[in-house]
Amino acid sequence: MLCESKARIGFLGACFFIGVLVASTVVPIGLLSDIYGRKWVFVATLCILITACIGFLTAKSLEELYVYMFLLGMTFPGRLIVGINYAQEFQKESWIEYVQPFNQAAQGITLILTAFYFQFISKHIFYIELTHVIFVGYMLV
Image (cartoon, rainbow, N blue to C red; front, top):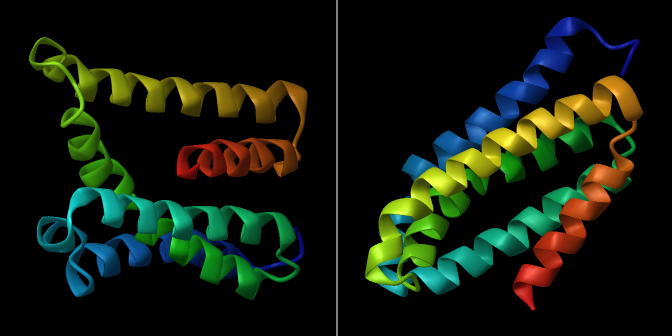
């Protein structure tokens, strides 16, 4: 990727947001969760997510990364909208107000720890992606 132009690398980030837009508008994930139930939409989202994570581990070209980044973007509404609402259905009434802030804090801590990992431990993403695949696979079981 060091030899690629900045425009091609930048498009990698754009693919994520294109996936978010497609999953939010063309394939309205929220509406599908209301029709078919949150559980099945969330499970389908996790299946797409694990496909994208495995794809990141095995990709050999930038074009493949575009596809997997698009798929990762498509999981965004299912994970962060449907998934949070699905998790709230299992909470006691007194805990519901804490689920959303806890989720956002966990996401922020994850970003900080990932940045720390890349800055001080390693520039390789393999072990982070492998942990992600194992975690998502565990959630599916």
